[in-house]
Image (cartoon, rainbow, N blue to C red; front, side, top):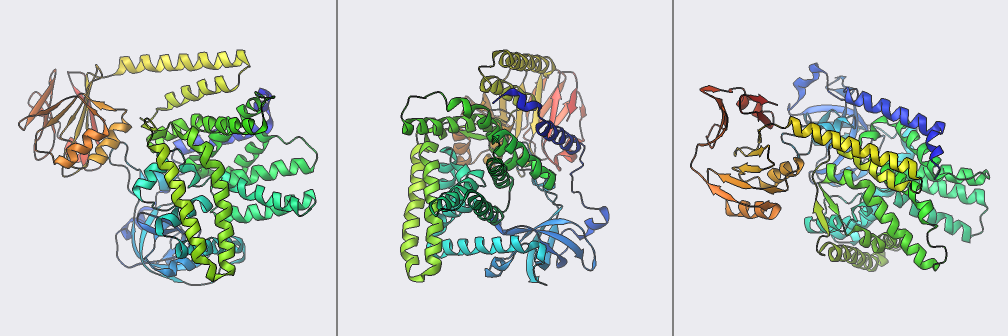
Length: 605
């Protein structure tokens, strides 16, 4: 791809718009804090909220949920967006986007992360414009879907019909696998299956992905071509079905990217112009962000466009590398190249969001990606046949169930290979910039001058940031975690050593914090109180542990004039001489507290 594309007006407008959105986000412009006068309604039982459903019905480990744009609360104006967790029952399956509803239940505010590495519910929902979470005790539909919402309501009805078919004909977990393959709504999949799919690098097949829209539109286009439709008719039919499917699966950023890019490419071909994939990608991103600016801060948007820009930059040149090879071999090599590029482009996102990356995904996706298209065809075909013939549903369910188990079995096979997946520490902003700087320096080859300039810029930035971090590092830092009833603490020294004091019983949360701080091994674990054997085994499985020491409480760690005292029932104390930093217990009630010391004084962060 010519680098002059990056000087085109469409790309420059997109880059400027994204920079403005990022600047506004950093200043809290997109925060969805509720007004002070509404805070008195939190945790109040029996609150009545009237509003309109604005999303498809989804499911997670806490149950079925929808987003609701509230309009009134107990008769007074309440212009707030909330996420409503619905009571279990068949009634919620009749909900459609655009339906006016009345909810009765309890409101609460989203919770911020208490410790590094924890899920930040507050930031996640604020980036989606959501201020409240409601546990619904009862709901009532108060009217009909208005005309502007009819298309979304019909699409949601079709999705519910498909999911009902899957639930009736397949076991629960197999139904969730197929729901993920067909719609991107896998729900709370059983833990061992979820881990196998993730470690095989195939999770993108069960979550929102533009490939699903591409498969559907290509299938419609192929059928229309076989039936002898004219080019304009084929394009119109593919757009109609693809648009309906995009609404059916929720119109998330990966789906809208694929749909709008396909629309732009098809329009260019009908007009007899060169179809620029780069221009189509920029147009799709711009349309998506104009419609909903908050999409920029979601993982779905970041992942889909990071992957696509890598493919657009590198694939045209890769496709020309084997001109004399058989067609089947070239296709196989292109699939492998796509898998490699996607993994490389998404690696920082894997590190910062998921904390784990698949190394075997390149091989696994060579088998699973083509198979997923065939499984989508089988799933939609079974739904159509089952809707026409109830008697055929048991046979269709058995076939789909076998396919779902085969999909998971292949994932388990790849994920069981040595080194299939690795735990990843989050990357800082500087590390992400340097990483993509070096990646782009490779992708734009053979433009050697620009490539060398990018590589040098990345090297200089990395060297400068490493030197600054070296000179700023304290003699010791202690991170006190908020994990009652225990008082875990992570101690890090200037020479790189890391100690863990009293991990407690919530080992999973402790391991998340260690990964978030880039700690993959511990030089010592210090215990001032007994630790359950099960928790100890899990800690040893989760990281490399070199030494363990059992000491009597209270245990003191001195760094110059500053002393840290661990193992007390009231929590860790920080002393300088006879003076105590008494503010720490109060701060710990809100979340983790970090104390840095140079040996002379302590600084609380």
